[in-house]
Image (cartoon, rainbow, N blue to C red; front, side):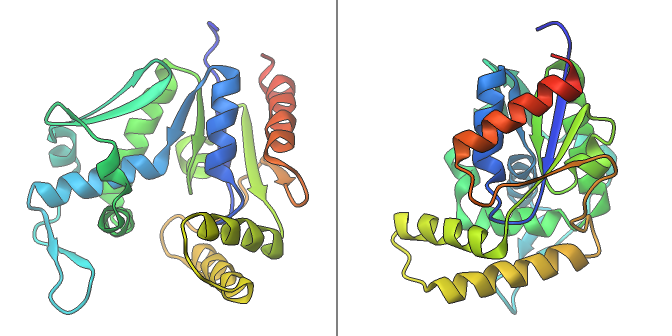
Length: 234
């Protein structure tokens, strides 16, 4: 496909964004641009480079030295696309399983609060979006990173539906938790995501709201493919 296309997807926790976006990109022959992976890589690398240390009073982290944008650009960290997949390398080593470690998720949330890091992550995503067609998934992909995307989607579902999906995921991983607790968790996350100071969750101007309640993954993906054909003319 010669025409470069950007499809940007956002939405609340548990709406199935990652699964849907990965499958959508695969079916369209686009690159799945996972914003979370970029922040996890930045958090891990800044920790490895000594800019972040563990906080003494809790399980979190603190800045030993806050980096500026020029330092971030000079990191031995490379983002590239190979066979329609985003590859992230740190000092020439491919990062994969490391990015899924629990403490790396905490690091990602920590660094995402810093404006310089967010600006750098936006640069990375836009550079990739200029070179290949992407399905971009992330908390500000529709509002900040790709506001001019030909298709912006706000993927959502009822709290009960999202809790049911999250509960199934927990069961697959052997986590024993009640449905009521998961509903509480989702509701609390919604509140936090909508009221946070940085990149609060919101419906972007011009976004198509897709409520996936009662829909299978295949039904959602096929619906989005139709929207891509309509809005992006591909």
